[in-house]
Image (tube, rainbow, N blue to C red; front, side, top):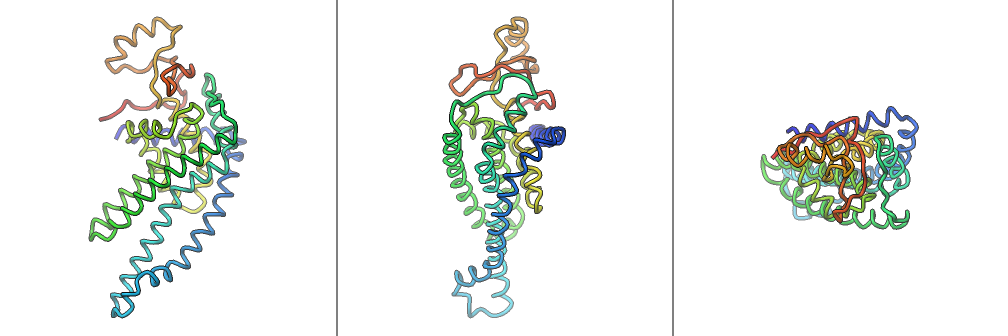
Length: 298
């Protein structure tokens, strides 16, 4: 639960950051507004055609008597729309990040700059960044579709389908939402998708604490657009403390303490170097000033 609370703390810290920097908040709204228009049209179309889709897919129930026909097809219609909403919540972030890659990259860099230390650079061009984001988003989408199909099928189980399955669905959505949002800062550090997933699985509670409240908030119309800039900022703050850290080479006193007390669970030194994906030092920075994470809970 401490990790869950820590993830929620990063989300709040990100929202506070963008409200303190109003220009960047407005800057980060533009991609979300474009994506909102696209998704609103898609969901309206699904809502108006879901009944016809269910009727077409269940011709064997045409001769059922009332009220069983209405209950059966009504439940299926609700499940179809729920699955569409589930996919919309998950893919909204990915699509918005693709549309707003230059916007959110600049916002994330500004967050890191304001927190101190060097801003990591991937060394790739904008087109290469977009291509990498697209490939990773498609891989994540395939995983989401698999979970969505399994949860859709589990929704037919009496009682469990109406209680446990929705909770699992929110947790799955929250994890993948955190995965997508942290991609902005982690790709800049040349951390590939497989390692990003490993990092978040190791701190699953942290990822869920960050992502699940966002999923719940994104269910409210327009909220997703206004929370996206702060969500990107919060994910950047989370990434700064998520990667493994080691003491800086020029601080021998703190280095000596890390060999002893650090292994016993003491807090991280105030200056450290985050290791890149190859194990070589990628940057040197102080810890984020606005929020510190709890220790891992197992």
